[in-house]
Image 1 (cartoon, helix red, strand yellow):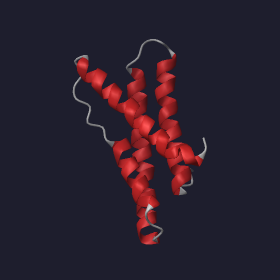
Image 2 (cartoon, helix red, strand yellow):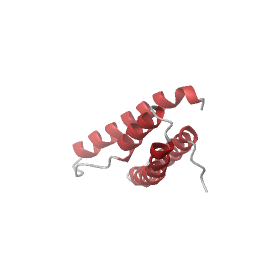
Image 3 (cartoon, rainbow, N blue to C red):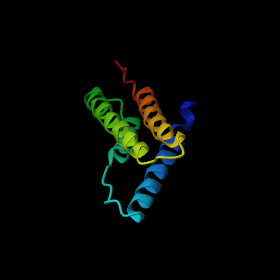
Image 4 (cartoon, helix red, strand yellow):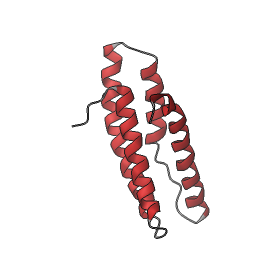
Length: 111
């Protein structure tokens, strides 16, 4: 994905998660309060506004943990679907792509 598409991709990802929350609630599931993606978006915006190492390094560190949390959340969303089979894969790939693009933008080296 081109870097120029990253903000639009984050918006799309937020929309996907919000629709999931809506339908989960509509089908009697408890309210989903997971917020790692919203926090990722906020930190990406903060990172875009600064180049001060005293701010950049803590943001990068926070993004690593939040991306991990979001990937776990995506895996959980995917497990909610029994069919079609590719829905689980869709959510897993969404989490992986959010992590990849966020790390690329933030300059985080994945170990």
